[in-house]
Image 1 (cartoon, rainbow over the protein chains, first blue to last red):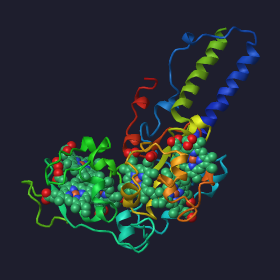
Image 2: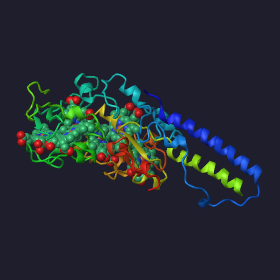
Image 3: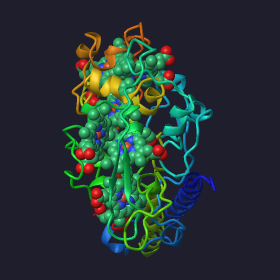
Image 4: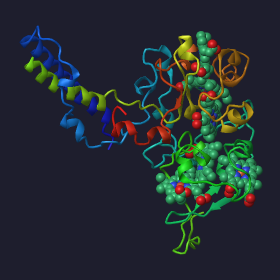
Length: 222
Length: 136
């Protein structure tokens, strides 16, 4: 499952470079004084290996939570990089999430189970969050379960002013929300898919099952 | 000449293959924020803010309400003067709440040239049109 695509590709690439280098050496030996061919001489073609790769489009299927020295964004030549914490270590004691994207952490559970104790005030570690308990149900047309927006699990982290009124008018049903906007990073997507759990974890938002008529099912999950 | 062309014919697809597969994509942590409005131009490595690391220690409210960070990577025009005056990162990286600003390379840790971004965002992970129609 955790086969590192990057490494396999690196190996393939190394083979390609090697055979490429061989071809160059051969051509140098054979036709040392030949004029360089122009680009038009070569018909466009792709190596079979590149055409039929197993995952043509899937990105980022490699290892997750890599140490900063190996993650491709931090500069390994920078002395501070090696001192930074590896996400895997930080997350080792936290509840896991199921999706293949994001941090792989269930931040709701991690907070609820006191695995982390993030400060609500910059200076005072004892200050408690002002939690507001109000669920807003947004009915969804079609087959997808309804969306339940929980104020409590948001206000444990956030201030009302983080959402109201810039992202959402504080009035039930007053906001037009669609998946297209969320995917592009608007509405719920301001946070989900950037820093909070990713958009692919559909059922965490679409959590209220409904019957065929669209009414909430009797045993709907809260 | 013919032979060289033939060799090039072998070479070209191989290099085309290289373009598809290498360089391997960056696999930094979800929500590592690269901030590079000024760093490249100033000859510093871009700053990398590990968002996931900070939320283990602080609720969103502390930074996004109390300290006034806007919800936009690169959207706060942070510079060193503001930081030493106690704004933005300087609200904590002051030697009291967290280690102080002289640890330049703890923050300026990015590969030069890395653009401002929230790493691993949905938009970044969508199937890339460039992969379907390379060169377009």
